[in-house]
Structures are given as structure tokens and as C-alpha cells.
Length: 285
Image 1 (cartoon, rainbow, N blue to C red):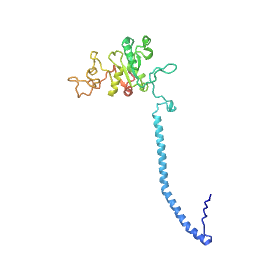
Image 2 (cartoon, rainbow, N blue to C red):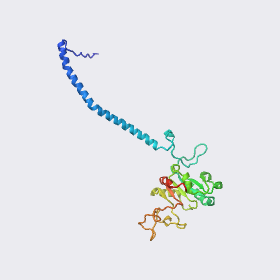
Image 3 (cartoon, one colour):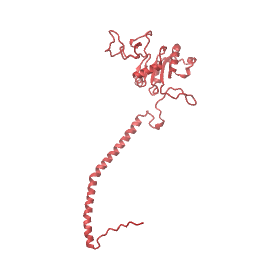
């Protein structure tokens, strides 16, 4: 194996030649140093400024992200670890031990009804129909009577809230906060005296969903007690948004009772609409 030998750089041996050598090298080295110094003097401040800007921008972005994360979190949860915060709830019954049989809440809707014991037969039909359609059911007992409902087999499958002499809007304001019903696609906030013989809750939900309706009500049978013509079922269409009446309602009508009318006895709200409506319900209701 042959070694690579690099011969040393030779320098002039006599003193005169060495002086001449250094005199020729020093100006070139000085000139190169001046060029480097000039480049650094002009470029370095700009680079430092840019670097400073990048650092400030990065710090600002991190601050904005952190501030947004804190502002988007529920009040009072800022100091909690992010993974432990649960923003919403649902109305699913849970056993004292173990887990519920059905953990899928994606299709659950809510029926909430203000009830009195005198209307128990109508309420029984209503509750049975909605429970069979995978609804959660909440009963607001405005007469304070709860125990007498235990005769019905579904009694333990619904949520009971009791307060004497209160309206359904009073109950809704206090027990149906938007964050509590956030797991529900639609909220049916109904009176107790409605017949449901011809109602298919699943079919109704599919219609309002396909039509993009955020506030609606089931149409009434023409044999029912009708207060406004717009609420009567139209035989030739699945959905109607206006009614026509000579001298009162025509195609140019833009206000109730010709259009934009939903009776408060059987309103149905989407999740998004309820978040808006809940804030409009006054505390004194």
C-alpha cells in the first residue's frame, strides 16, 4: 500500500525574498478581510431584523393559538387538562354498574312534554310512539304528580322533572340548555293534548332534515281543531311553507299567518335553531 505524501509549501529561504513574499500576501489578505467585513456590515442587520421578525411572528402565532384554545374552552375549564374536558351531555339512562346496552347516541332526538295526570292516556300513546322511534323522552310534571305514572311500563325509561304550576317554556329554559341537548338532532317541545295516531316520528325527522327546516311542526289533520289555516296538512305535498286565502294570503305574502308560522303547541327545533331560541326565552316564563 502506497502512502500519499503531500510536499510542504516552500517559502523563500533568504530574508529579502521572505519580505517580498509577505508584502505581496498581506495586501491581498487585507482586501479580502475588508470585503468580508463590508458584506457582514450590510447583510447582517437585515438578517437579524428578519430573524427578529420571524421570532416575533412565531411567538405571536403561538400566543394566538394558545389564546384561541383557552377562549374556545368552556368557562371554568381553562385550568383543566384538555383531555378531561367534556363539553356536552345527553339524556341516555345509565345503569349503576357496567355500561348501557346501546352506546350509539348519533341518531337520538328528544321529545319534551309538559304533562298533567289528567291527560295520561294521550301522553301514554305519545311516549310509546316516540320511544319506539329511538327518542329520548322528558316529562315536565306541571301538577307535581309523578308517582301515579308508574303504572306505565315505560315509566323508568323516561326522565321526570316536577315543578308545580309551571309552563313548558319555564321547564325548557331551566332544563334544556343548548349544551345539554347538544347530542340531540331535533328537539320536539310539545303540549300534552296532541293525537299521534297518524304520526311517524322517524319519517317526520327525515322530511325536515331533507328540506333543511330548522323550526317546523307536524301539519294538523283537517278534522282537528284548527286555529290557523297554514297548520292544516296539504294533501298534495309533504311540506308547505305558506298558505293561500283570497283577500288575505297570496303568493306575495311575506308575513304570518300566511307564511313563517309555527304554532307553539307542537314546535320542532333543530339543534342549531334551539341554541338561538333558548336565548330568546325570557326567565319569567
